[in-house]
View 1: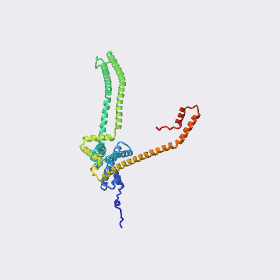
View 2: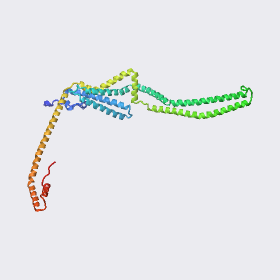
View 3: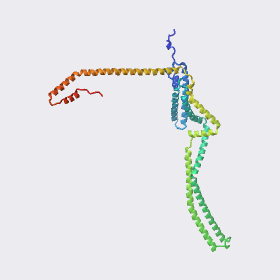
View 4: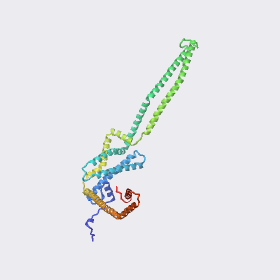
Length: 398
């Protein structure tokens, strides 16, 4: 015997947890979507596009942060955080696209601008990953060019002082050489005079030979003193030149330590490669275009897929909730008005009862005050009235 199931309970659909997750990604309401047979798969498709974009953004941002952060754990956390931001933006945008406003291109335009910005930026890590070897080679060449440029800047910085020191060094050396030539000439004159090959032609130490010897000895002494004095100056110049060269080498070493293979350096290398490689240019812009499509997938899917009964249910349910909210508000207002009216009437009656119940006691108190005034010959009527106002009469409410 077949079980007799009521018509309203014959069909019951229980979605899987993954389907519910995809519906959540597509911003669909499970309670309304369960009974929309055709729209179930549509919103699975939209949810899958959101999931793909979310995962892609997470992986891409993780790789980006791995190029600038040493800790892989921090890179993964930052990648998940940025992916969650992209997911939030996607869900907010596709939630605003419905049957009744999907012809408004504001969400699509905004998402397009966002995708263009993010896609262009995120294309760089993808290209850096794909062309890693070529970019490393270009980075090495760029770093060498930077070293040469730094050396040129340092040479220009110290050029004037080095030229000045080199001129002083050359002048001192010329001065030493000139003095040495004078000494050499005097020595040659002295020797030629003594051996008879020059001068007077007489052999031996004669007066002229002695005079030439004295001249030679004088010049030689002056040369020795000059050489000694200039040596101090030349040593000072050489020390300063060596210090300049040491400073240049130190600056070059420090600059070399700053050279790296980081993200911006690799992006610069990529830019240099794009200038020289047409094949890379084509692939780069193709990847940018593909990434833009990936970023636009959720909005494109929500815009292109036709609307079904789910959107009608959403509008009807929203209208019903608005109507019920207005009805409940009016009902609450009426109840509060009725409460206030009944409270007023009961308070009014309570006040009347209060004065009615206290009337006799007030009369007795007034009679007592009057009797006391009558017996007290020294109290005036005004004094009695002031006492009556204070102890018998009521105060007006503010």
